[in-house]
Length: 297
Image 1 (cartoon, one colour):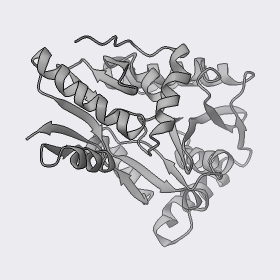
Image 2 (cartoon, one colour; image 1 turned 30 degrees about the horizontal axis):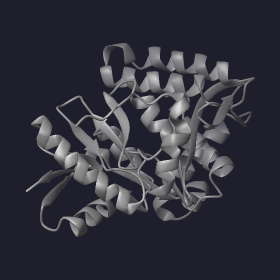
Image 3 (tube, one colour; image 1 turned 180 degrees about the horizontal axis):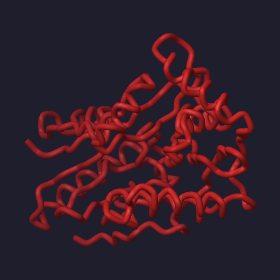
């Protein structure tokens, strides 16, 4: 039994989106942008198996993302993957499995599998209105940061990323990379490669971007896309740390200008970073999108 797994390319966008549309969810991995950009770093390939979309991570043996497609196709694909894993001599393993996915799996194969949730890859999902207004006592500190930014930089401005300013963003990202030691940190370097490719291919990938300027220069930018009918996902956010309040300001401005048609904003995971976790929790997420590893009992 062989399947033709391949690395996702730009021409696969419509195919991948077709299957994601059949099985919508709020996990940030369920977008073509995410799988395309990160497959350049991680050894992830895809195939269509029994009319369901399957991603395979080859970095540590064989592990599969939960298939995307119509329910019957997903069940058929899971059965095929179990057989495939047995034939290859690898234990059957699924990653990035949400509670909804596991519930479906357990209905089809009761008591056969177990899941271990991985805190570092859980997505933070916020109510759009709260990110836009920062209303309430719990977000008082965020409002203070915004107000201080506006006092320090009264000539600030916000604009959409377009063909005229995207090169400026690219140059700002390169400067950010030099300031943050990305060349000495493999994960930071990979993230920066994703950021630069996001800018280089923003139109081809269908990304929406926003820029925060201070004194006419780019101080921060953010990029994202619709994830499902009620959720927008923010993939990229970069700001200069020496511009006080730039991060909370681009966060709020991007939401106000680009996300108000959606009930929720997914700001992805914290990758196990203690500082990032503290920052994301401080915005008071409405809920987390849990994801875990599934193995046979």
